[in-house]
Image 1 (cartoon, rainbow, N blue to C red):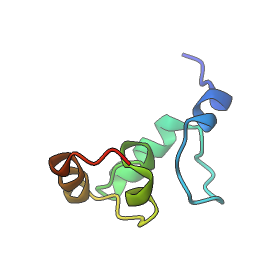
Image 2 (tube, rainbow, N blue to C red):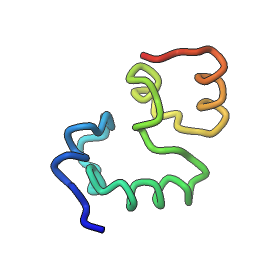
Image 3 (cartoon, rainbow, N blue to C red):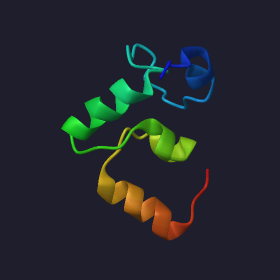
Image 4 (tube, one colour):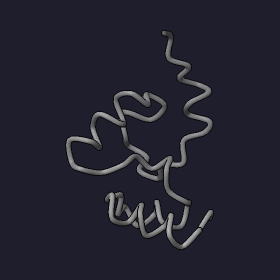
Length: 68
């Protein structure tokens, strides 16, 4: 399967600019799993900017119904 880097980057909401994994979703997911985290793309923008990408924060966001 070919990585669609440009398409992925366009949809990436990660605010960590020097990230070498932007647009490389499989690398991003593997990186965050090692830290028991989820990638930026599963969080609303306001939550993503806090850099709290924990599973607990994800559950909290889902329960609250927050979309942005």
